[in-house]
Image (cartoon, rainbow, N blue to C red; front, side, top):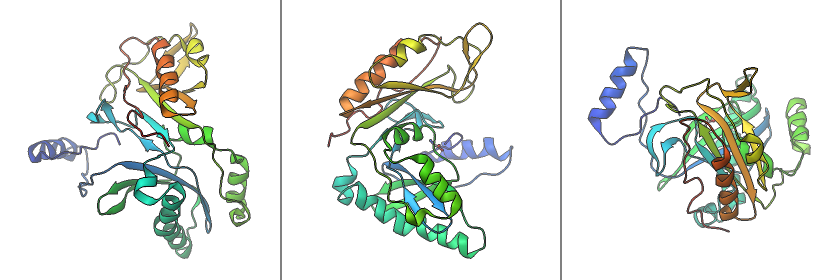
Length: 274
Ligand code: GLY
């Protein structure tokens, strides 16, 4: 995420470390190469239920260039999992068995059961799947492409997690539709986002077929909506194919007026359709 430098350049790594050492600590991690997957598990402390995998785009610029951000876009499902793992269900079963359940069982054995949303951030390397991070929350913007595809009631899953009855709940079902989200960010994000600028065109954007908006950093200043942070609005588009979802999302993005705004143009580009 933000503040992370992934580099092959030793001098750049040292300079980055020095700039952060003055503010506290620096964590050095193994350099993992491969596509990222965000996989969310709902846990009642003993049993888990996985949601559909999504891919986040962490870098600010097209082609995975520029600084790391909180996430500039996402898509779900991930058709390429079929070639690598035999299918989404096989991948989910593997990560449930090898990652989620061991963590949840261990926390339970320690007397600190994990009840809630376990977010596994994964890298699919040539040597196997590696965990790069866990979060105890939904991912942003991946959630924007996972929940619109969820057919089973989310409330039922959350209630079962809270009341320790997930075992009685079937694996969540997901629609065949694909989803992509494109983040519209303020000028200067992630280093120094410019805030306070008016955001227009949102009604027109939301009226594009298959599109809805998720507000991330907007507020009404009395005269209309203004941007209040780095990632301002997520444009979410559903479609029967990634080509259709991309067309809808970018048509809507082009209707949003925010001076100096930035977005990636390559979200879900090149995804092989199922
Ligand atoms: N998109 C990354 C995160 O939510 O941490």
